[in-house]
Image 1 (cartoon, rainbow, N blue to C red):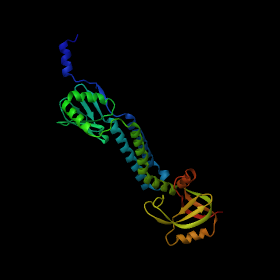
Image 2: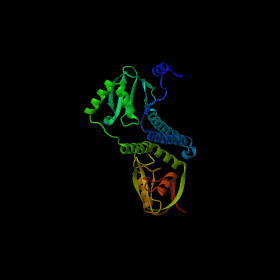
Image 3: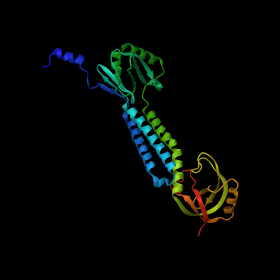
Image 4: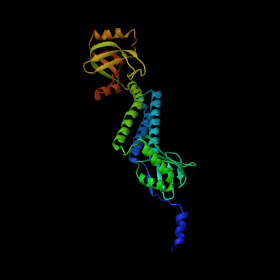
Length: 307
């Protein structure tokens, strides 16, 4: 039977192993980001091994695949960092961890300053006279338990923080919908924007490795200039010949065309409309047929009269 003296000794000297509460953000957003980022990483690994897709364009395959892998790993680390960040509240201490940093233990009486942080002053940052510190959000789960602990064990810094927060313009309630939409928008816009250049390079490599012959009815042709948005000649402008066809949409020929010859070549086909067989990039042709809203014009590798 445990005596009163033994119980009081254990309560004073034994370290509690289970926290009263864990203060952290909702993990669902970070978990979703980590899962999506793992998919991006897997895509990058697949790109690195897709020799049949890229053909002889090894430099493009390695460059775009490596970039996608690095992007995916970076987003994974960002998601894991958010999942790891937390403040565990014990009766006799706080155990705070921010991302991949080591866990800081904060004991009663060690906190010398508490400050509002982050946009809208939704963050609460505590600093000790040693190496310990913590960062939590006022709208995190179980924040009320942390607030009670601070009011009892860091009375003066907590009161100073409360007074300072009252003087500042601060967010008074969580913006769940706004935060979710902002996160989704950043992911949906940022990732495609970063992957746009590798995607265009990959499409150009696929076109070169998978040519297809297609018979099209040419109605007119004219000399033109390919802008930097083209999948061929990314980052600059090049002279070209643009074919207008009745059944294949607009087609662009760049190979073998320069500023002196483009108008001559264009007039040749413009004056002799009819059926021609074009050798086209397979990827751009597929996009034009199945995703007509996608701004792509298949590149012409060769053209000859239809038989």
